[in-house]
Image 1: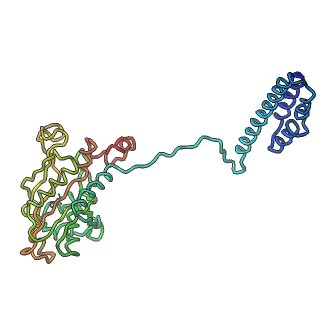
Image 2: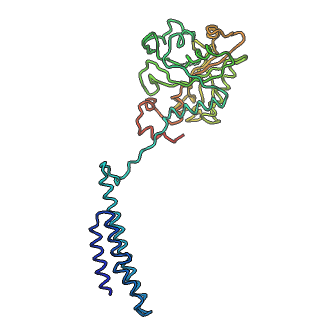
Image 3: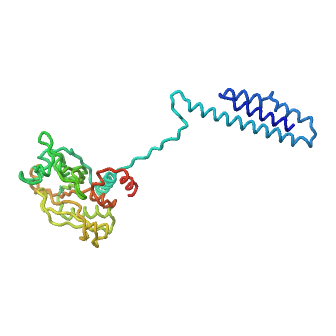
Length: 341
Ligand code: PHE
């Protein structure tokens, strides 16, 4: 009996090997496992056996059935795979997939968004204007004398039609004051352009965030308070800020803004060149001459403005030693910064 079963299994295996379509599998299955199959017939003969003999015989039949099922299963799987491979489009569905890597925000974009959020939480609205500007908005209205060196070709990129690439986001101050009456409380993040050679701390394209607050009774204290709040939210509560006298044509008095070095807590290190302070940008009280040009009564209103360097902030946040890294877009570098903040 055992021999008979073994040759049955062998016969089935050989026939299954020859199957090349799902239909062949169905036929062979019917032949070896179906109602009229030899195997099924053998099950019927169990009755002829004694009670003692039945379990062993049943076990043999079952294992034969399991073996034949396994051959059918694996052959049918192979037929499916082969059919995929030969898909009429020539597309091989069995090739391993290519996993797509996810994109992420550039560190500058992340920091820009953070800055936006900090100022919005302080009640600022966001204003924007074009990067291509005219001399009026980039220089004249900002009280910049006709012979000021920043107007030179060596400093400013001029484009056709007497236009230029804005050298500062202060242009947005003018655009906003042309359009809206005080009270005004806006920031304006955006790209600026200067004819500078790229080096570790310069780039012909860079990003500023301008702030402008105009209302009755605005003073230098409000400027300092805003700077201090911003620095604390951005860099932590330990950070101090200060302003130093400076000059800009469109602010009077003018100042430069510093925060205590975030790398050494103001102790003095390589990042702050041992000074304990880091420069954040320019600031000042809006010059009455600017208000006059725009028809805002400087007897009633005062205001402050400042411009922050966004690359500087991103470099501090991400420990980036060279500004050019932010613009070269070497993916290996950018991937390192992703998810760090
Ligand atoms: N626009 C100035 C700059 O480019 C910065 C500044 C902004 C100064 C606002 C005063 C007020 O450096």
